[in-house]
Length: 382
Image 1 (cartoon, rainbow, N blue to C red):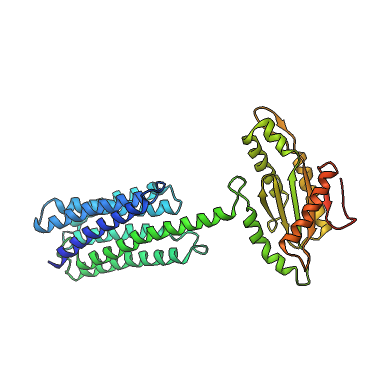
Image 2 (cartoon, rainbow, N blue to C red):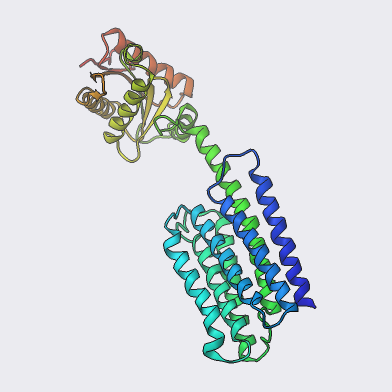
């Protein structure tokens, strides 16, 4: 009776998880992980219903069909976890494992011809699929969030408990049914961990994407104004201490408005992306380029004085001139004007960028396609 009650709990629990997953997705873009997870829960509802019915019909085929259905549902659950972890190759791993486990469940009672062999085979199959789900969370362990680590450890721990308990029940002759109480309780914990864990992981991922979109320019893939100023803040604080200087370059593309008017918005976007790629190739890993808006960009050069910053700006200027943008309609040659300065101890962001921008405007007045230094008398044209 206790086992049948637990099976009813599993049916109702998986229905509740399916409902929660469906409600969570209403009005949102279709998730590539939550819908498979929902399907997995519904498959397990059917499987548990068959296993429940098999308790009243011993020796019927319902037990085997329910067992295969349960393994299939858990395999889809594992596949959804692999999809969440950006592993589209999951069918090549999960599907062969599923077929092998179904054969194990069907063949093991015949091979062992001992009481409890069917329960042992099913429990081992369930444990292996739980392990497969947990392993999806282990890659990039160092960079993983605390939620991801906790879920991975708990899921693997549940899988081990299922396997150990099933083996002990079989060895001690206590596994006289297809499903033991220990296995059902462990699967109940796995269902909670997997279902609510998937919801929490998806929510965490969405919040991370929103945070990233708030600081990253979607066109160029580099920090936007907000992201660049966030990265600049610690270097502004360090400028108040003695040490190596940090420089800032502000630049914009010459005659960019004319390019958009003559060739269209799409070509303008292509020019922006090309300029960013060129700039990134000329910078160190520690340097940072950001898009302030339109065709205006800023470059952060840590531990770089004005003289070295001029060299970097010149290198980027020459690279832009040497790399025309090829479109279907024309080959577009672009140039850029640069203004640069170093961060001073008494600077705030407004004063710093005003100084660099004034140098950039001075480069524009001189005809563009040149580098100008912000310090009085240090203006440079090439």
